[in-house]
Length: 210
Image (cartoon, rainbow, N blue to C red):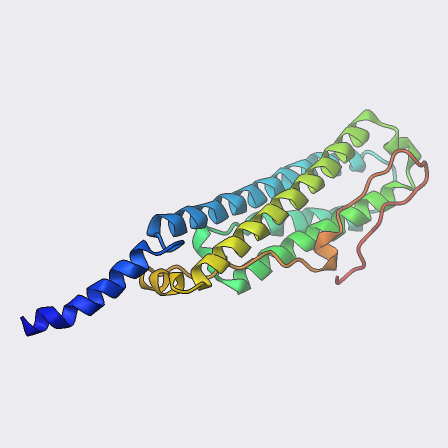
């Protein structure tokens, strides 16, 4: 009886935590899953961009005397960016998120330089293949920005949930850890721009090292 009386207060506290507003285990699981789905969309959009690069490079190769260094840098950046795929568990590791961001930023910068150099080849810009790939690239960059923003919003909601009392106690029991938001530097956030409305207008190119 004595042991039972000692356990009653603990059981009451446990029930309060489990049944309290916003403390439902299933709610945390649902929010966690939304973060995972948002991240999957981020990676999908980046992969979509990577899939465009080989065709873009092959199209540009057809231009006489096109800078081979630029093509090599884009190809190598694409290879590195494609090799880094993060799982849902990796979202708890800031170092892995940073590695992913840096690889994608390098590809963004390489593509920006390639498009800038292409401005010097009007015959290349006039081809249907180059115009089509450039338009697809621009659209993909926009989708990347949307997916990245959605991921950050889901992470903010999730992190707020598991840090709020008394949910933080409940989350700790089941091993829910904070997720890492996508904090891109200036270079990663600057998407390659293609403007066909103003002939001769050069795309904005991120400064090397940003």
